[in-house]
Length: 465
Image (cartoon, rainbow, N blue to C red; front, side, top):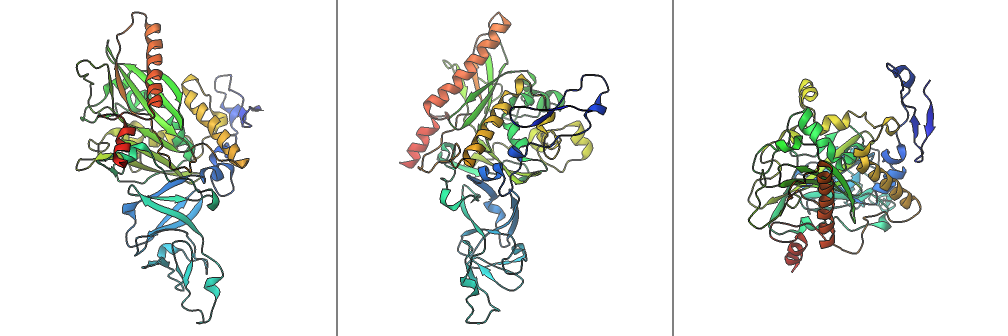
């Protein structure tokens, strides 16, 4: 029989199989870590995630019909009424329970198809047409509604305690003048994945899967902004993880020549955001007298739980006004394999993030994992997540809940460094790790990332003026 033991997180871990053909002794699959993975109303993680604004839909989804959504286990309907106001209401009419997805959008709010009850975006009952003229029924209660807002071509919802509303997302990259925002997936998104939200967020802090999944196994799946395959992705890099003011910046340094190092990095911002970019030209060419090239990140990616076994990705791609979406301009295999719809044999032969994430079971069983040194980022994220949930349970605000109007800095973006190879291989690798960390620490010290003409922080301040 399998032997179970409790680790320091409270997860029951099964004993390792220590003999060939030993699956018989490990047939019983432990339960998932519900503390970190379950997001429904009243769950520890669900109450934590409800302290933040989340993207609910792209603005372009809201047309003349209501849109049904499920977010963190709650059935909702989202719409834009004739006044341009966005509503985010509980799906089922509070009269007799008919779904408001079949309702009619009106000048003010939405009207149920069954008996005509009309609801404003704040849940106020505006009309109960079949009730007697002197009825006060509509004045006695409200239909369930959440606060919604629309900006950056996205509809956002806050589903937490009304007395603890945080600032809306206000990242420096979103304030750079001259840019618009486009969906990050080839099909225009949102991108549905049939797995738990944490499997996608774990991927945000797992940079070293890229050379295996996105290169050596499935063939090179990354393309630079100038349309070239980044074959250097096949090189096994040196991983590092830097704690930032808002989360974790992951690093992977690859020596691509005797004097050039590619610093690949992705920033995780708690609770469920990735910020990433790509070099605009490949291979990198340093202007004379420069030893560093940096490209500010172009993509924000949110992993929003629909329920415990389904997640919605919504991405914002910074796109220069009048130009093509830089992420989807050259369709790359990494994006094609990040969503459903491909033939099953193709999924098997050329898997991507979609297959790797949903293939971990609908909810990954952490007790069956064997984390190694390359999983440091995953361990850091789960530890921080557990602590943040416990903070909410104790009545406090978790990290990254702001109510002071601040602009939140970002710190990622791929870079190339001119670094001469050291004769000693071990010393060279140590130098790569040291210089990569120093690069991110400089970004953090500057208070934000660097764009093509200066700092993004300066660009945002200039825009504000």
